[in-house]
Length: 422
Ligand SMILES: *Cc1c(COP(=O)(O)O)cnc(C)c1O
Image (cartoon, rainbow, N blue to C red; front, side, top):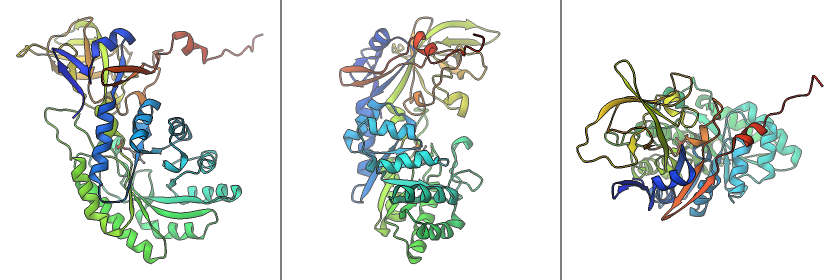
């Protein structure tokens, strides 16, 4: 459920007409709903009630400081994958001891930064990273709290580009090598084992792969404890999917996901950490765009809009579906026609939808791509010389621009031309 609904024939973000925001800020624009963010955080919190838990929101889904602050105020910790994201968490008021640092290629400088901020936990993804971390921590005279990310070799049954838990993927330590690497961790200076970590992929629409992975985690935890390691936290990653096609998708509910967690690892007495990103931010955001042309092609109609793949890359990158809603509510029974919804970029991949049945929308009218709050703005670029688009956060009947659209001058001012030729 989200808070983007039609009211009096017009799409609203909570209590604000979407058209008002478009008029004030221009298009394209991302609009986020505070109430939806809060609701999704709460749903996870309730799903794990009765179990000691820590929810580390995955910053990469949507790292806008206003989004992070909203979640931090609810009690969220943060899961980050770079020093830049770590600094975002800090800037939103989340202290280092509430930040989990994940990622397959953390540099020595990033590890040093994390330790200087008293990081809650480093999820180490290789024996090689462990050696580097030990060296960095020892040189600083501190101890690094770590979990090893194991790769459980489980098929997440999601899009290949976001499946991370198969042995052929670059992530984590093969589960067959876990005991050996934990033994090494215990022997190294500057390392304190605090837990075990797993993350098998994103946009999972079935609980079975989670169940399989968490069961392996439970078994490994018992083995590691028998080996003498103090496994007191289990980080189970993120990955719970959301409905992108609202009419015919019903991914598992956080409550049922929580039940799987309790059933598979609940008996171990560990603090449970989860790292949801998409489920918290995805349906809390829409991308609003204006139709530039309704172009008649050979046997096809193209709706050319002012948003493009640089603003929202998911359709081009993952063949992702986004529901498309006209901002003015179509009349009941309005006739639909199939159109291709495309952006202005010089790539055929700049296509948001092919053959989509939409009620009549013409030049100058606004449409919204739903479920665009996660992996939308955070994956955007300035390709084709298009400045990053603004982000707006709504709260009740108020809205605020939480990232302004840069001017063309600002965009150009980042480049410099060397004066080689005098
Ligand atoms: C991307 C990622 C997440 C978040 O995944 P969602 O599908 O957005 O919930 C969590 N943990 C790690 C390590 C990740 O890489």
